[in-house]
Amino acid sequence: MAYVDTKPTGGRHFLQIPGPTNVPDRVLRAMDNPTMDHRGPEFGRFGKALLEKVRAVFRTEGHVVIYPASGTGAWEAALANTLSPGDRVLMSETGWFATLWREMAERLSLRPEFLKGDWRRGADPAQIEARLREDMKSPGEQAIKAVCVVHNETSTGATSRIDEVRKAIDAAGHPALLLVDTISSLGSIDYRHDEWGVDVTVAGSQKGLMLPPGLSFNAVSAKALKASEDAKLPRSFWDWRSMLAANETGYFPYTPATNLLYGLDAAVDMLAEAGLDNVFARHDRHAEATRRAVRAWGLEIQCEEPRHYSSSLTAVRVPEGHSADALRATILERHNMSLGNGLGPLKDRVFRIGHLGDFGDLQLVGTLGGVEMGLRAAGVPHKPGGVQAAMEYLSGNA
Image 1 (tube, rainbow, N blue to C red):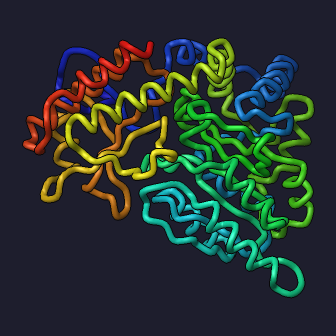
Image 2: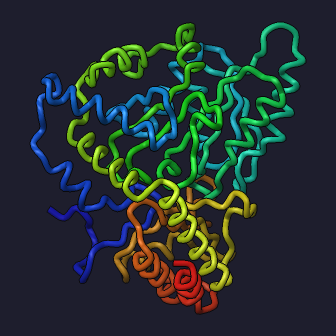
Image 3: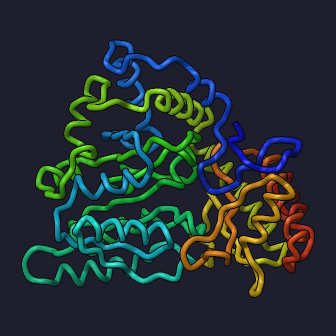
């Protein structure tokens, strides 16, 4: 069976979308083990140890709930466990995934307020603070119950400063919960659930955690657990209460994704052995090398604010009159490499280079080489020398 339907070519397919990412052999081998009895004593010991060690990736001492679901499921879990129908939530329009989270909130009978953005930078803490101060002036109980922010907007390559969002909430003196989507940043970009006062961190397995899709996470603060006691949105599958009760002894209230948990165990070990700070530094280097290549080509980076540059991916705008999708198709056909497409209003306007997860210098040089050859083959106006600019940076910053 052909799992990747491309024409026969030498070498492996380059999967350079911003997730799912390449799964390292060590993780693949861990998943390639017999499925154990998820009600037996061996699983209980395994599950208890895994639930404890995964906390380090979130930098939390609190509970981390693991679902057999995509990141979208973890979005819903974060909302359903903390809020009630009609609750107002404040959200920042940073891109496509922030937009989808807002749409989910509407479907769940919440009332999202969407702070306008231009899809070229992260969330604006001053904008958030101003709206929260306004809410504090309203008579009676505050209307806004939660602030929802996408840490790393995968559609644009812009990273919000969650520490600054936390300071904005505190400066306003507002009691709102802080819910953060780290699906394309966890394990790739510095993130601190406890230190930054996040109440629910949403994450997925298929990006910085180097696993296939299929697991998602909620890291939960004590404040969020308290809010869940009064939350009235319907929840069954996503209910933290049944999860945490079973997790006490290492088990789950329903059938877990056992072999993906084996892979998660190996991936967390890999991150710990490398050291999270070293992993973040590697991602920073690869992101900067990629941006230098883009500038050398004479192309434009979608994110306009350098403080918000993503270390997981770089979204690149193609010149007016040219098609990003045609470029991606050319690169796939000629060089067997997949790049991320533009989403929403950025469809056919940008292509996205993923440089996250299990990824090294030579893989990056090969990726950028494929892009540069593709630009030429597709007739997209550019200057040569992007790969050279990246190599010069990497060789001097090893």
